[in-house]
Image: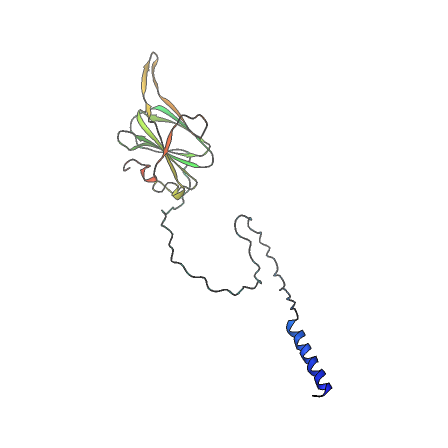
Length: 213
């Protein structure tokens, strides 16, 4: 091999090495024009990725056959107005019941006759408001369901329903006085507070009504 041919070979080898290992400069795509629609709240969804971003090549993830447990359906309905929802008793309403509620939830309240297990009166309370109503005489249990979305009498507040029952019964009675008679007046605060004297216990949604209505 002549000296000239040898230099040509070396030059070609160096040129090939230079082209092979030269770092590539990647020019990013131009960003698309931003939409004029206001962006949603930062907490409502994850940040959107650029439509021009490239998708890395990955293997297809395995599919799973997990089926979540069924949930009770809830057809959201407008919340009833605050106050008396239904009355089932035909006796005279001579006593009085006052119920004060905590803000932040709706309350569906069942004044249930202890003898029959049937509701005597139902109330719907908007949280933070007070119910003041005449009620019949007798001995009653107080049950209440609370939640955010009203689903009707069957499902109450859906899967987010919290149902409780007062630990004591409420006796509404009439007593004779020198001026005629006086009737019981119970005041119930459905508000958690230090030193409160209303004991409650959690019950299932299915036992909110003690019997058939």
